[in-house]
View 1 (cartoon, rainbow over the protein chains, first blue to last red):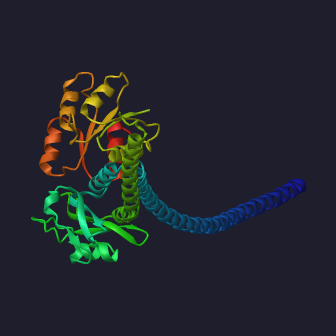
View 2: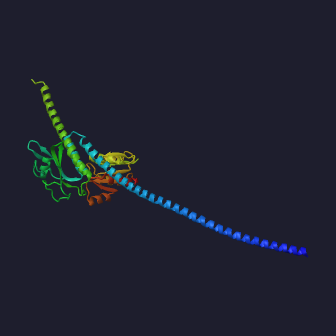
View 3: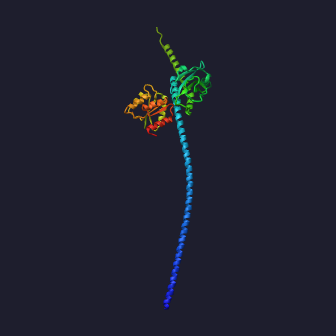
Length: 266
Length: 124
């Protein structure tokens, strides 16, 4: 009986111990769960913080890339614009090269005049114009060639007389305020008058009375061409005229020599 | 390598157009001084990819050249660009009616000319 009571007492103690163990186990489980939750929360916060930092960095990078993109875009626009300008410059230089090449491609006076006319029509776009050369004996501008207008309609002009005479005397180009296409031509009032100059010596003028209907304004290359014509056309005209004159003289002298060499007939 | 036939009686304009055309990659420029010369160059057997022609030329003008080219089954599909001093709308219409593909008025703008040629050669 005593043994049974002892066993029961031990069993009860065991039961209590087991219950306390179970309780402790439950408390510990709860604690672990609490800690795990706390840990998870702290990890999430850390992650969020990390992500926030990363987002900030990325946003900064994005801002900087956008800024760089804008800069590059701007640079591209500038390069594109520059490319167009260089292309235009190339085209203009090609025009000037061809004009200059053609002007100096011959020593034949009439061919040089023809080339000057071609340049004025095709490269400048003039419709009615004349080339006038100074007659050194009379100090007058004499029409040498004309296009789109009868050469007989162009009067001789004294140096200093009117717009054309003044351009020839002073050596400064004249440009009218607008390129309006006039109904009638006034031979004394051109739209453009360019002196043909060798250094400061004027040998003649190019007088433009009207432009082709599609020509509405002057471009930069037009002024370059006018400058080129003022110098190169003058040199080409002057040298070809001298060459033609000397050729003529040479032929005359040669004829005389041939005559002298001929044996007198008996 | 596109073969470009430039038909122009003015040596200055011919040189200017040829100069511009040589800026196209691998372009081969053939020059003719009038319509008859152009037909001769066409008949030499070389495949011409595009023709640039003036209107006012001696012997045979540009418009006559266009109608003859369009009337020939061998050449009828060659693009033709007219370059001329005649800038009126009527001239443009007339050139297009007889079969020109484009019409450019002088003084030519080189870039415009290059772009037009590139367009008709399928380079744009």
